[in-house]
Length: 121
Image 1 (cartoon, rainbow, N blue to C red):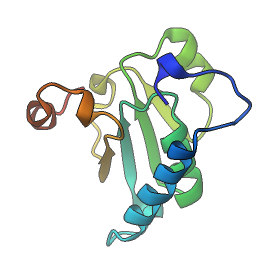
Image 2 (cartoon, rainbow, N blue to C red):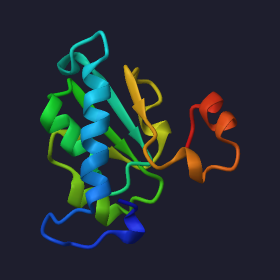
Image 3 (tube, rainbow, N blue to C red):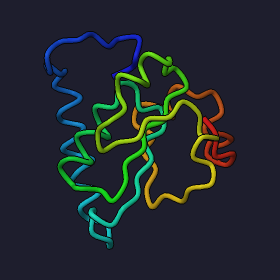
């Protein structure tokens, strides 16, 4: 969920979000490496629902959520779980990831090919 849309709703999620998680999970399970060995970066992660759910369900080796719209307050609120939250990709530029998720991101970028080539969001 985009941060601008987020409300503290005691866990109620839109059916699209839960269906998307199931689809992405099935796709990840078809990869040659076991999910528990994967280091996963979720670019434009919004409130972190997707990466949190996938990390919990698939037991990723590492889960990182990036969103340029995280405020200091939001980052403080989200830290402490299994997923690391960062504002900028530069905060994890030295790291290597096995899988990058761009869920509900690419369609909002004017030049998607340039984004993917640059490695920045």
